[in-house]
Image: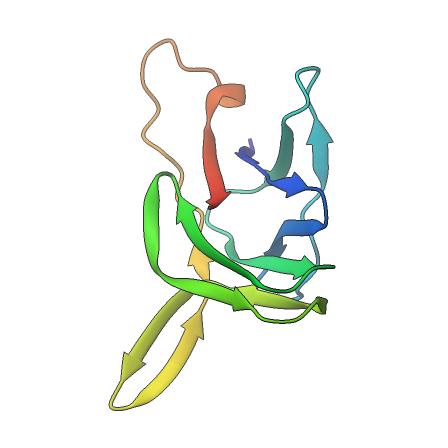
Length: 122
């Protein structure tokens, strides 16, 4: 059983979900309505990978509608992918740790293909 997560790919921006340990992108599928989904097993750790052909862009990340609490400021084009997750500052030291896919509690009438989450960059 897998969880799927809505992906964001727009214009000059590339956004992918990648495995925390390998930085390899999860397999993607495109629905008839154009939505892109990543195929992910439950309990996986992941990062959001972002790259852009444009600079002068500031973005905020949301996972399932929750702001991750920081922004990405792309002052110049970023061809090399950046990996983003949970940002913390502890004792003056900044760390970025992986996010985690939690399997949702399955409700009556909910099929496995309905177990989705959403990643947004605004």
